[in-house]
Length: 222
Length: 237
Image (cartoon, rainbow over all chains, first blue to last red; front, side, top):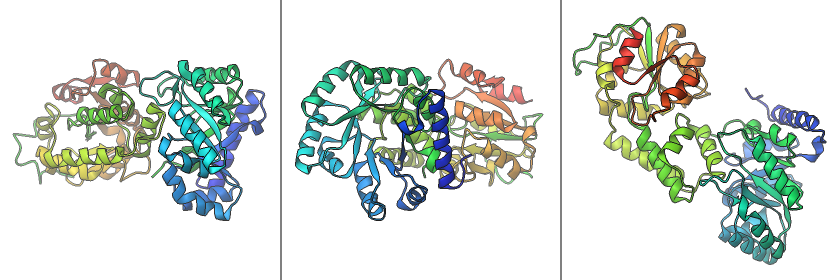
């Protein structure tokens, strides 16, 4: 069972991250916790902000636009990351609202983001979402096409921060996290966005620099 | 508690004998043939949205889950938020099924009709009571369950695979959970049913059950597997 109170849940997740980091001989400070606040309203998010959380993740541009500008009025140092799929026609809105985008997965989006960044005059960090298990149904850039997409992203001068993945649902995630970490090293990137409520500790032991945690912080979504 | 207010429109009943003091039925896939149709619809929607998925994939990954757990399982499967319009499409399909009705699992209606009037029984489902109530009416066995329709979404905080809904139903029936038998078909369901402490029969009679389904349920710890309601009757005698 989750603790009732936001501060306790946040502390429990931080402790779990610290334990996993220690196991891997890493500093817990090298792992950033993204609180996935999709489907939660401002009243549910506020206690977590009070408890000190400043980095949040959302799935949809429209949902984030509806609730975050007001929350940011009272807490100015909030960082917002987009972790859900981005449609090219929403690129400008996403660039304006978010500090990082974890779901760059195709060439057309690279172009749209580059144009949006020039227009808006802001350059959020970008992660390429990789379909790390090469699953036919899964979103993300196929592993084999990653080098070409990275070349495009660099040519378009996107600020590349790293790679993101969601491993296969029914398999042990560790090998997939390890593969993503290898791809990050091979391609000279730094950021590793991997691990969610069920597997973030494993992800931390394998090098995650961003973990995306929703349920363990908010409880089940309504 | 007696259940002889209802069931009168049904064929001869009261013929089944059982060593248990109460029987708890999962609904979708145990009494109602809803799983295959529902999972095919999920698969078609995801496929059309660019995430090739078969009805079998859907059953293997999402069946038996509800609410936030169901959405989280889909998001994990496709690596993204559920596509826009998914909830609306699900609701439209549910509305169609509610209006038109769905088939019973083979042998289910006769089995329910054969329960002795004095045997407490309940539905323990992840679906909402409106779904249970309406489909039981379509099937003509609504009265056999009285007020004992329990939803993992409405009556307890933690749905399946937590054991809470089974424990809740046993309490409401006034029967010790250890004296109950539960009929379940999904991996998620049998996980919770086994954890409740009841005796569990894994039913693989629905058309959604792949050839290896019995093995999956056995691997979770189910000892009694029934391929038909006749086998259920023998196993619980």
